[in-house]
Length: 243
Image 1: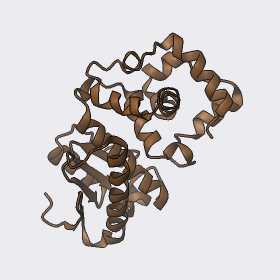
Image 2: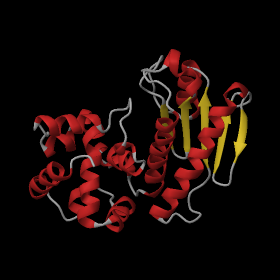
Image 3: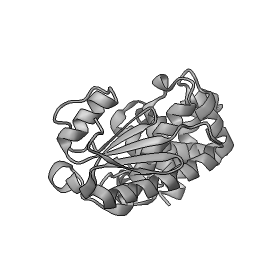
Image 4: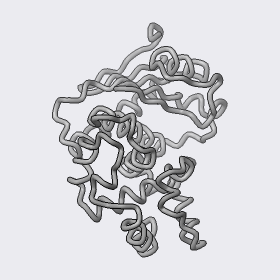
């Protein structure tokens, strides 16, 4: 499927692209290098992670075909315009930024794109390290990815930060039980729980949880229960906000 693609090869990554997308491929390769370096330090990866392969699909049809046929991930066709990246094992398919204007729900902003690449790398690394990724809860998966990629620190079309700001302004924070169970809240609020847990427990405990949790019960592994965690998380969030 990659016969017509050219490649940028780095020590820990391979970036595939069609020739008109060379500038985006170079940006992607740089983001992969920086993200992998940061995550290698965070998780003490050493040389355990195989090279990551990133493919820039030039259009929506190519994106859907690569996801379905190369990654073997079920996908609707045409896929939702908000879907612009799909990881599986150590492969990631991206919709090329050159296709955003016509075939995505987002404007192309280079800094947002680079952080999104880092976000997907977090998923790759977590899957590589987890003893049972299939039972890992969505709030934990997405919370880690948004937090470790620094997406939470920036306003963007992906809206990971803005819903939290708005909820704080209105005094309408969701219940923790909803954040832990509702997919629509896992993306914008999961990172707040991960960030609080890191500050309360330390990054070493978070890293160990990624590597050791096999039953999906993240809070129990960190010595927490929802009822004990919720008032502390709410008070911390109200005090610290999104800063």
